[in-house]
Amino acid sequence: MRIAIVGGGIGGLTTALALKEFGFEAEVYEQAPMLLDVGAAIAVWPNALRVLERLGLAEAIHQHAGEMDEIRWLDRRGFLINRVSIPRSVALHRADLQSTLRHALPPSWIKLGYSLAAYDVCKDKVIVRFTNNEEIEADFLMGADGIHSDVRSQLLGDGPPSYRGYTVWRGIASAAPGSVSSNTAIEIHGRGQRFGIGPVGNGRVGWWATANATTEQHSSHDTQSELLRLFHSWYKPAVRLIEATASNRILTTPAFDRDASSIWGDTRVTLLGDAIHPTTPNLGQGGCLAMEDAMVLARCFEKYGPSEEALRKYESCRQSRTAAITKYSRFYGNVGQWQNQLARGIKKIFLSLAPESVLQRVVQTVFDYDATTVTV
Ligand SMILES: Cc1cc2nc3c(=O)[nH]c(=O)nc-3n(C[C@H](O)[C@H](O)[C@H](O)COP(=O)(O)OP(=O)(O)OC[C@H]3O[C@@H](n4cnc5c(N)ncnc54)[C@H](O)[C@@H]3O)c2cc1C
Image (cartoon, rainbow, N blue to C red; front, side, top):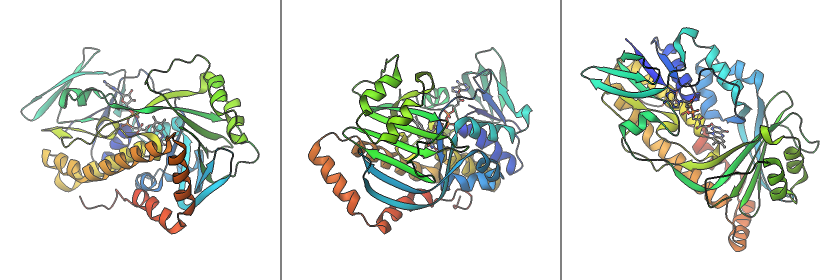
């Protein structure tokens, strides 16, 4: 049996690993000629750590990662608005996460330099064609090819994702400014702008920043100067982190997502991760949801056998969870990007008055999902 996964990102690699865990074999077809150490920090929250633990990778991840057991919200001057304790979570360089996943797979399962051109479903097979003129015949095709998924375009043809009105910048600084507390994820709110700080292991600090932008095109050549201009009067450690990160090490990404789709697949083809439910980065959950998808998909193959029935079960199991997180993330981002002074004042009062028990309940709805045991 041949299971073809298109896309060797977090979702594709975790899906191959989860299938392996349940005794199946898969091949991951990735367009990049080599898997480069690109990207910034990525948070892995308890819902995804459970998946990595089940795959025997938790220890390897912890070796590379910074740990977080608290979230703090500050105003732009650095005054505490509120805080909540959270179950142990981690953040690490995306390259470390990707390479941990990749090295846990047999090398022969990963095919680099294979960009999907098109696929055809013929009776009980899927013919997958690549732009390098190679072609394979697979029993199942899983589209894990990210937010601009070609598998999705062919399956759903529903156009590009939606821009949500703000830009996100990310960087990693090699050392923490003195006053930043370890084990804490910090989110700072200002007027139409936010700044986030978190430990990413080996003394490094990951940071992210947002600002409203009417267009998704962003064309600054000197990103560091632009950010220093936008954040110059903010909490000093935030400014120090920007100063410590050269422009060519800062990633700029417009915030996108999509409304939930009721169709995730057809016959022997399905979608997972950003290919089906791209999510704004506000909750740091897009990659975590892709890992949940991977585990649920593999468990459905185990329970129902490798079949179209298993794919449809996987899809129905995942729809409401991913739609809820995507919606909540969009809402949280919209509120976070408010510019209106009155609205921001009300937000600050609500956030500062929220008892920890309420904040914990909100956090739990996201973190408590267990893809390794949820009914499939
Ligand atoms: C600013 C920002 C911050 C974020 N922070 C977090 C965070 O802290 N925690 C978190 O969990 N998530 C975070 N995310 C979301 C996370 O990055 C994504 O949800 C996650 O990468 C999705 O994984 P994926 O495997 O579905 O897609 P991707 O990681 O995008 O991987 C898709 C892969 O498919 C390949 N591909 C594309 N087209 C083809 C083709 N035609 N043929 C073959 N291969 C193809 C690509 O090269 C790529 O390797 C963040 C996102 C952003 C933008």
